Length: 365
Image 1 (spheres, rainbow, N blue to C red):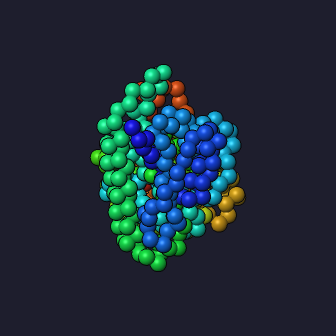
Image 2 (spheres, rainbow, N blue to C red):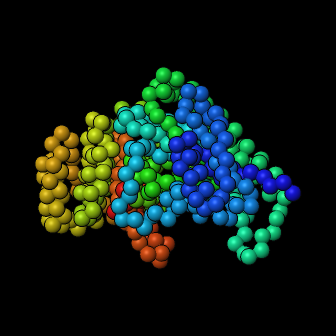
Image 3 (tube, rainbow, N blue to C red):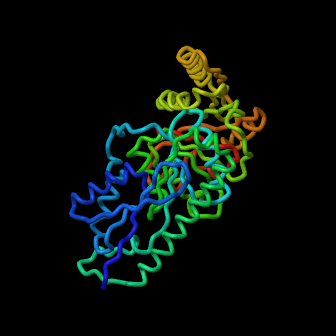
């Protein structure tokens, strides 16, 4: 039987060349095939290998994308960019517009990533005996073709909505690969030190299901901006008020540093808010005053407004404040917890993913 070439990923040309070298170092034959995802865009390339080499190629691909680099304490420095997952849903379209405008304002590259389930890649056996199933190749062709066609239509509609001239002002890259969305989003972001991940939640398709978004938030080492499906569309320059929810944690200053780095081009007012129960303590008032003085001294050009809110229910109290002050973005940190704590006492960030219609910017503490 004639052996068939299988596409394992679509990458920008320069990255495809690097992956090709790595595969060939492992004696895996590799072929690159140009495709035209967008006119006037950088060349995108299908990376193809023989189907018999899939089992040996997947570990090389995973390492290339960063799945084995997550244990590194310091992320590698690569081109500054915004990472936006794509799944072709309405909320994904809204999210991509927001990500484009952020990349344009920050003057950085925009990387689109789409993951689809490939029956060949995800049916690779790890036993000693390989059982060949010829029907998988036909199914793989259909899945790959549909993914590329849908991606091309999506990007064409997005660029048309944004406008041809404005679209050209931002450098874009496209990655299309078989895989699992949460794993590949995190792997790419950590390996390439993304400035921010911008993604949606609340839709019906796989990528924007709240569980995937929440898992990315929980495990991301880079900031994650979550756009709820029901949130009203706003121009990026209309964002004027950002709420940072603090629990007086030592990680606050690191998170606020990252927040200011993202907000630097914006003229925004930052509300630092702490919610406590009715028994207010002088100690919390003192800590809030200390936080305000440090922030105003360190960021003289930013407008900080520090508030102490009283309420039994954190979410309800924050919601009330958000509506009263017309907050445009909520920002907070999320902490690593053990599995028992995660299941029975979810973090405020995870709750807010499902609760709020206001965009949420989360930093990993």
